Length: 485
Image (cartoon, rainbow, N blue to C red; front, side, top):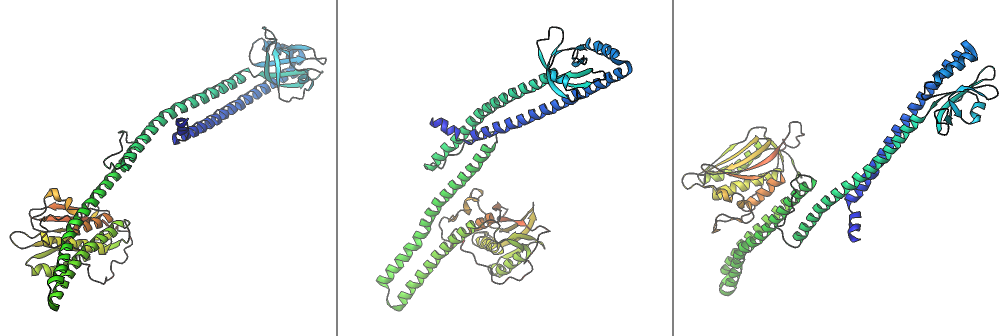
């Protein structure tokens, strides 16, 4: 009973009932329409045939009188077909015809109206077989009455044939619907049961479980693919959370330990105002480092929570590259390097200008820290171009580059390829760049060059017919500094 109730409540069962009802009604309407149309057509043909017979016999009576009419009717009755004839005198005695019996009221009401009557045919042993016909009765001069009609046997047989076809069709529809329901319900229920079982295992904590694919590329396979991608993403996020937790513990333990040690040392050994001031300054330096870490994490979280396309507007990338170059060129030249830029005029992209400025700043800061060549001067190249329907912004250096196996890992939070962690930074700069790129529908990609490394993000270009608002306005405020690389 529970299994039956479960099947009755399934969508497959309800859809099957709906399909049965729809196909039954449609089939019934179609067959009824065809039946009625055919019946009307055949009735019109009967009427035309009867009227034609009447006209011909009337002409015979007018030309030759009652004798020629009797001979003509007698001759026509010798050729059996669907036509019916009966001629009676004023007393009701049959003179000629092929009708053995019919209701007397038909001959009494000789008004020429079309009637549907029951009759028996004369001769050939058919006097006891009652039939149906469509007849007209007219009164002639001299008290004679003439009946002309058409047997409806063929029409009735055709109507019965259609009725039987309708009943057979309805039975076939119901049987096929039942077979289809059994097939669909079993297949659909099996797929749903598989999804439910996999979901239950995932809910129990097995994040490696995935939904099975039938390989048919149907809607269930597409749903399973999307859910598996979502589960991959969830598993990745869970693993990232674990890694972040481990990295936070590692990165914060050292400054917090130093902070505690300095405070304890100051309380124990510091002498006079200078000693306490030095301890407070060291403590302030460590707290600033901790605050930079937490601010970077909060900003990445805010960026990842933003809806794609939010606060986006057309922006001039040529101008943005020039502003960033103007900010960093003196710094790079002071360190003996040089900064090259290359961005064509009218290069525009739909983006959040402040976030893209932060991306370029982070990539340049990262190149300044880790992109210096072993020999020679540092050369940074900041470029922009439109390629394959996307606007590409890239920062290149001539340093040692990054091993290709670490291209993906270096974008994770708190990942620093410099294992000693002696360089200042938090390991969050590239994570922020990756979050901004994903917000803009793009990616952060690395490519090793000879020599150096190229970091690139892609943005959506501004179409020529879009409304370019605000591109020519002066923007106030300085470019935001990186939140730690």
